[in-house]
Amino acid sequence: MNERGLLIVLSGPSGVGKGTVRKAIFNEEDTKLQYSISMTTRSPRDGEVDGVDYFFKSREEFEELIKKDKLLEWAEYVGNYYGTPVDYVEETLQKGQDVMLEIEVQGALQVRKAFPEGLFIFLAPPSLNELKSRIQTRGTESEDLINNRMTVAKEEIEMMDAYDYVVENDKVEFACERIKSIVVAEHCRRERVANRYKRMLEVE
Ligand code: 5GP
Image 1 (spheres, protein in one colour):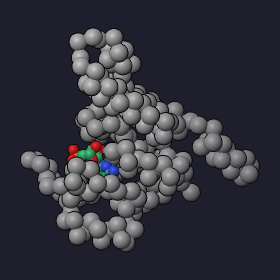
Image 2 (image 1 turned 90 degrees about the horizontal axis):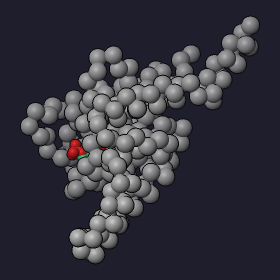
Image 3 (image 1 turned 90 degrees about the vertical axis):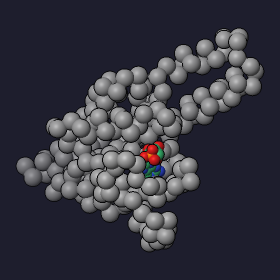
Image 4 (image 1 turned 180 degrees about the vertical axis):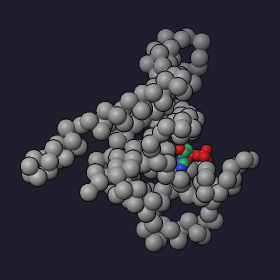
C-alpha cells in the first residue's frame, strides 16, 4: 500500500508573491509535486487557460459546489470566490503523491482544521523585521501612516502562528529552494517513516 502523500499549503499575505513562487516550483521539470488547480469566479486574465490556471466558474456553479461539499476550503477574496476541489486532493494523496495548494490565508486556516497533518508554509515578505524597526525609527512618516503600517505588519506576523514554517520571499529562487528542502525534510519525519519500518519488521 502507498504511503499517503503530503498536503502542502503555501500561503501568506497578499502581494507577497505566492503565485510567482508556486509557478517557479512547478516550472521545474523534475518536480514530483502535484498542483491542485483552484476554482474561481473571477474572469480569466490574458493568457490564462481554463483547467490549467484555474477552473473558471459562475457564482451559481460555485455556490452549488459549496452546497454539495465539493470544496476542501473556500474564501471570498476581492469580490470573487476561490476554492479547492476536495476530490482531486483526496485522490492524489491516496495515490501517495504530494499535493500543493497555493491559497490565501483564510482558506489556509480552514485546511489546517480539516488536515492538521498537512504541511503549512507561510511565505513572508522580505525583511519584515527590518521593516518594523524602520517604521518605528523613521521620523518622517505621519503617525497615522506609521500606525497603519504597524497594524498590517503585526497582522502579518500573527498569521504565521497557524503555520509550521516561515519562508522569506527575498528572492524567488531562494524561496523555492527553501520550500523544496522543507518538503524533503518533512518526508524524513519520524512519525511518517516509523510506520513503514514497523510494517517491515512485522513482515520479517
Ligand atoms: P488571483 O486572483 O491573483 O489569481 O488570486 C488571488 C488570491 O487568491 C491569491 O492570494 C491566491 O493565493 C488565492 N487563491 C487562489 N486559489 C485559491 C483557493 O482555491 N482558495 C483560496 N482560499 N484562495 C485561493
